[in-house]
Structure formats: structure tokens, C-alpha cells
Image 1 (spheres, rainbow, N blue to C red):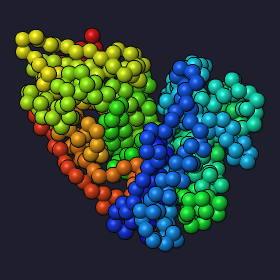
Image 2 (image 1 turned 60 degrees about the horizontal axis):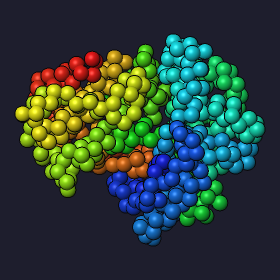
Image 3 (image 1 turned 135 degrees about the horizontal axis):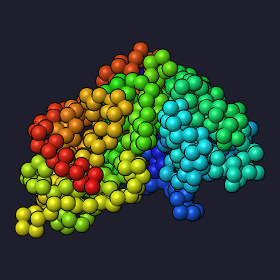
Image 4 (image 1 turned 60 degrees about the vertical axis):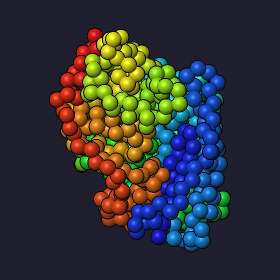
Length: 491
């Protein structure tokens, strides 16, 4: 018995086939092999053709099935989908796509979200939507309505990228509460789509898809899709979630106090809280987590930091000796004491940071002494500065009720660095657990939960391989360095 998971990203589509009984990934593939194109006709715009996602999905599926060999397609019992969040797909009554998808990193809708925030009232938005309408899916649809009125008049349904892929697979147009919340369509106080937001923008509620559970049958593979993919007609799609909630699920993060984190070019901290709450300054974004219900609230609080791994990469290009790899950089930095002998680096050199109320402070280096400090001090201070930015965001989450117990992460990017891991554990006070998983494997396991193959999430992730555990040490020294770092940030 097997489970198939898809991760629909903006750079590629990944597919993984997982053996249900043992949780072993038996085949995995992604397409395209180079980063998928993003169309940007004007500054701040970012669009992708949904047909591109389908083409990549077909190629990745063919590759996975070829790797898997002669398995009976009837033994693939369920399909799960993870997808890039906050995108907008517009379709007509025949599910034809009317325009390229406006994806997550497109910023054209900012003025529309700002107008809604002011007109509806900041307090109301934060109490009911938990966020400013900002640059999320609802505001993107408002841009289409004002700037492409003829096209808008033809829209029958609007969908998130994962909703569209699921609709192509099954012919069923539906979404989830988690999906509506990430589009800022969901009223957490009324526990339904926000009529007040819809009325303000002039949207008819019928434009939203039917709501289905995150875990459960959301449609079954059509004959046409099955033939194109080489799969069995009638295979159910039983799970879907945005990439960050799904990443948390993939790491077994479901309960209050748990955190999932990634640290690539940018960094993400995604913490689960057990009550409906918001940040008064909207520096972090709460959404319905995969296991959220009105009776048992589970919100995923999302912090995204632009200036993380990109700083480490800049240090490698600019400060480290030519040819030095990241592992050697880590070794060099580890030879410097905690606190980098007084150097503090603010890592915010990759644009405005939402965590800083959308200020673009730039990266800055503080405390350099020309007689004491060298490359190694700067390399360590860079990793410490990245960690401290994570911890600053975690403090915002703590103000919302998050009690940090554990941080779960995949062993990738900055989490490959023992120095980074020790610094994060020591500063946050949380135990860090590293796991061997990814989004498409998590989506496959989620499909197993939705299909009833697993009786619970705990059973689904019981075979998740834990690679390392890092306990907090040297707390006093790390906290002293962190407090010095904050003093520079708050100047």
C-alpha cells in the first residue's frame, strides 16, 4: 500500500511515493530540474501559468512511477497536496484558467489591502481576520476586479494553487478553512467566510470554493487525469495544505508550544498556539493550522525573515577566503567564543522585514575592533545574528501565548551548521530536533491520515526518522550576546 504526495512550489513540483506501512519513501522526483520561471512584467509583479504546474506535475509523476518499478497502480491508495501559499488562480465555469496566477511574492495588491485595513478598521481586522488583508489572496482578487473588469466578470471561482491542482486532478472545486484563512477570507470570530470583507471588496461569496476538511476525501482522480498521469482512476485526494502548515505537519508539529523552522535564503519560524490570537502590530501572521477546529483552536503563527541564509552566502562570497565551503566556514566560526568577542550583526539586508513593521533597516555590523577581530569573528557573528532574529520573532509569538518547548527542522541549509543549531537552542531555550523529511513526503503522510489508513497523526509520523537532538547549553552567555544584539536593533 502506497501514498503519493505532491509539493507544488514556485521553483519546482516535487512528487514522492511513500510506503504506508513503514513510512519509507520509495521514489522521489522533481521537475523542472532548473528553477521554474516567474514572469514579472512590472516591478513587484510575479506570475506563473498554472499549466506550468500541471506540466511539471506530470513529469515528476512519470519519473516517480518509473523509479518505483512494477507496483500496481491500485496500490496507491491516496494523494496529498502541499502548495505555495497566498496565490490566486481565477477560472471560468468550465475550469479554464482566465489569467496567469498572481503568486505569493507578487506585491501589486499592497495598496488594496491597506485600504481595506483602514476602512474596515485595524482592530476589527485583527480581531476577526487575525491579520491585515495586506498582500494576500483577497487583496490580489481586488486588484483583478479593479484593473481587469472584463476578465473579473467571467470568474466563476477563485482558488489557491493547491485548490487548482486538486480541481484538475478530480474535477471537484473545493478548498479548506486553512486555505481560506491564508487568503484572509476567513472570520475566526464568526467561524465562516468573512461577509464584511467580501462586501467591502464587492465579492460574491459564491466565488469561493466549497469547504472540505483538510484531512478527508476532497475528490477522486478523474479518468482523464489518471490516463495523463499513469495512475488509477478513482484514487482519492485526501489532504491539502499550504507549504508552511504542511512543512510543520511533515515535522510532526501539531500542538501548542511546538515550532517548525527552515533557514534557507530566507528563514521561517512557524509556531502552533492553542487559542485564537493576533499580534497587535501584525508583525507575524496567524493562520488556521492543518488540525484547527472552532472547538479546538490550532493556529500556525508564521514569521518570515528575509535576511537569513542570504547573509551567510554573502559572508562566503565576500568575507571568507576564496574556495572555502560552508562546512569550513562553520569550523572557522566555531573557534570564536559565544558572542563573537563583542561583534553584533543585524541580518536585515534583503529588503523590508515584516517583523520590524515593514522597515528596511539594512544589514549593519556593530562592535568591530580592528586590532582584535578577523574573518572568524564576522562569520560567527553572522550566524549568531541570524539566530537572534529568529529569537526576536519567537518573542513576538510568546506575547501571543506561544510557550516554546521544541523546535523541529529538517537537516538542510543553515540547520546543517552545528554552530547555528547550538546557538538557536542556547538562545531560545528550546530543544532542537532534526528530522529526515520534506514537503512531498509530508503530504503523502497527510493523505494517509485523510484516507483513514493512519488512525492519527501520531501513527502517521511514528516512523519519522529523528537525526539529531540538540539541548540548550550555555544559556547565560547566549542570552548576554542576544541582549547586546537587541540593544543595537532598538537604537
